[in-house]
Image: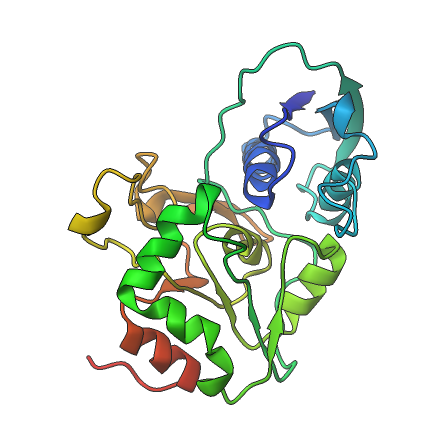
Length: 269
């Protein structure tokens, strides 16, 4: 049996949910391939009882535990099979479970495109956890492009956000021609369906700007901040587990890059 424990801080966001689920599913599949596991595996998931039937805001179309259950039902199963058990518990401490972004485990449904539109997730506001990234986007000029994205795209734009039910979000991304997001939110979710994604406001390997010095860790793509190189992300291609770089996402390194991706212009060599 494998165990996953969510707490107050990890039960809410797609990135932290993905971190817990993907890591366990990848480990199970890896051990199946080695012949170490041959029987169906039970995964027991502990969830704080406060979040049972609890909605993030009145505008959200799902409760926290409903979102978790949707993820469980829609992940591809490891080849040995899995059974999910959910147990609610009374949270008694404020210790946050560690999480990382070093595993991509796919959903059963994968990106197909063909919808004739692009998708966009915007910064929700300028406060809290998005403050540093938003200021990066403002300073680079990319935020102005995003706020006026219809002027640069020949495709209609569909806005996605956390308030959508996960099924609506994923179905919208599956048929998107290309997805645009900040580094967070659906940046991670798009990986689970291999949706082509452009990350704005956070160039990979960008030099930390002097005017923002001391405001947070710059980071870049998956694994770099947490000591795991770009080439060693744990993944599964529906046949086998492997380590390799994520290929679905590209970081726009400048305003011209971002315009080029929207206008589908070739980048200079």
